Image 1 (cartoon, rainbow, N blue to C red):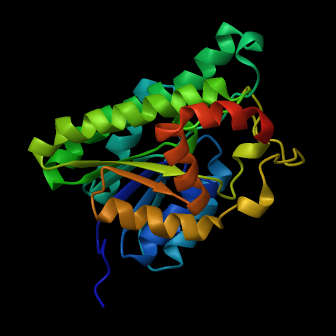
Image 2: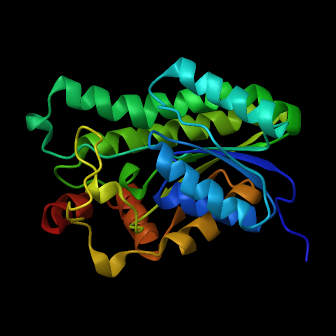
Amino acid sequence: MARRFEDAVVWITGGGSGLGAAMATRFADEGAHVAVSGRRAERLHEVVTAVEARGRRALAVPCDVTDDEAVGAAVQAVVDELGKLDVAVANAGFGVMGAVADLSADDWRRQLEVNVVGAASTARHAIPHLERTQGRLALVGSVSGLVYVPKNGAYQASKAAVLAMGRTLAMELAPRGVSCTVLQPGFVKSEIGRVDNDGQFHEDRRDKRPAQLMWETDDAARVMVAAIYRRKVEYTFTGHGRVAAFLGRHLPGLVQVLGPRVV
């Protein structure tokens, strides 16, 4: 059976762990050559090894998405080394937690610089290359951009912005033959729960998200890659994520009552 991304070139930011790493190996299973970017070089090289074990070419390109010049250089390095770009996935992100009244301006800047400006920078530098291949752009949002609970305001605002950006990009890019998919997961096993408000990872930090609702990372990667292949404009998953998104969109009054009880 033909693989859906045979000999395509895929670039994933935030590709050293969690969903980014799982998508990298899933794309490789589907025949793609994969480049991964992130701040932790040793993690990127682990993903490269996993991709190469599947018989695909792989490239680690360390990059901080808050550095626009570095993002531009990263995508150029991918194209120079692997020859083209068919899929770009803006996956880098983290969560600033706390009541809005308690967050500083710097907290907000860090949150938006990574999750929103970083995604926009990734898209901007990838788009000229994707136009040449009639390729696919994907932004990783979250169900948190659709349904809101206390002490998550900054993260929720950033993911609502990612959705708005992605929906706009889908319209702007369609005439050029490029699709844009906003991926909106519910709870998925990843390292995001062990990253602090400064964006620093802590191995011993407890993930406070509900373990009973967590999807396995590989299962999430499978449906995300499929949604990108199908050029979906917006794809919301898991089961609980879809329920939460429906409530957030259509029954905000009920969420207002229930939201404080789930944190």
